[in-house]
Image 1 (cartoon, rainbow, N blue to C red):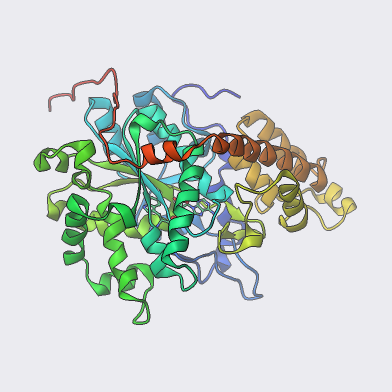
Image 2 (cartoon, rainbow, N blue to C red; image 1 turned 120 degrees about the vertical axis):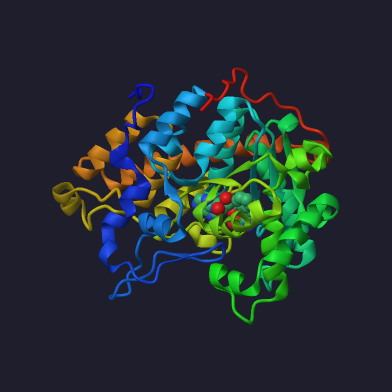
Length: 436
Ligand code: TYM
């Protein structure tokens, strides 16, 4: 099912961000989404509710990724929107149009994303934003900085010591490299190693402005949170300013100050950048733009996200094919009927079915996905078959990933993490802005 260029995405009936709220919107009380907690809340009977993404976009004051902006994205870049964009997985943004203006006019900008290393292996949910970021890097041909927030994880978790955070960083950087980023255009850094110089100056510029009250309100912190957690908010934000990276953007502060960034992430990271956007212009910097995705749900269902700290909620990138099969068969929440008979009679509910949702994230073929949806909802395809298809797809994805990861040597890691100039071309055919 090829989309016509410039047409809104064909799979509107599969838009995950749109779907989830339909299930239980009226009862969705107590939803929490912060960088540290994600829950759709519970209804009166104690049932976990799916995250209501429409409500979240409104609450956060972000903008939905509308067919208009997708159409402009396609026109300006010459690329059909990524399947995440077509399917409502990447569903909202802040000032994406400003980045499209830059690309259109050949003005510099960069991509910024990150990982808080909290486990030896990343999981399937983490690779999503990285895969999408790699795609954006290929489409825009711009530099990318990837921040490893080992300091954040150390300060936030009672269990993680500095040595653990450093070990996780090393392992996770290999995972990230295995996604396939172009080395010439990518700088990966650990906070423990990189804080200092121009970066630290920006951290301090921000830290001086952000008040305890603002952090409390935005992150739900209270007087029991340690001061490191409060201060870290400035660290994550400072990466959104090009002046933090003179080795990439040069020593001319005024020139670098005009270079904005685009931050792809799941919506849980948005609170950090709200702070940053509030102060950017006062610091004579550009506000960062963002593009948000929904969460890959936990195996247990769409009320919470796949999380590295809850082992049974996640499929890790170092899981064996057998483990993947067992986890899906044992834990994956099914939207199928209670019995084969009931399933054939009433069909399955793809909106809450975890194997179907995973296929929506990972299966590239729009037509096959649509066939599965129709057949499962009619009760023709059974739960076992759907799980089998999901297992095959995830096994192939994880095995391919592990093969690429196996080729990442210590030297390759060191080169990605070396502060050095990057090489990029941007838009080869920029257009001049029309004179007003
Ligand atoms: P972290 O390590 O929690 O997550 C890394 C990236 O994965 C996203 N993510 C998910 N996406 C989909 N489904 C899930 N279940 C899921 N769980 C996590 C996160 O939103 C993130 O994009 N503090 C950050 C590290 C960081 C960062 C950034 C992330 C620093 N600067 C800029 C994004 C952009 C963290 O702990 O991410």
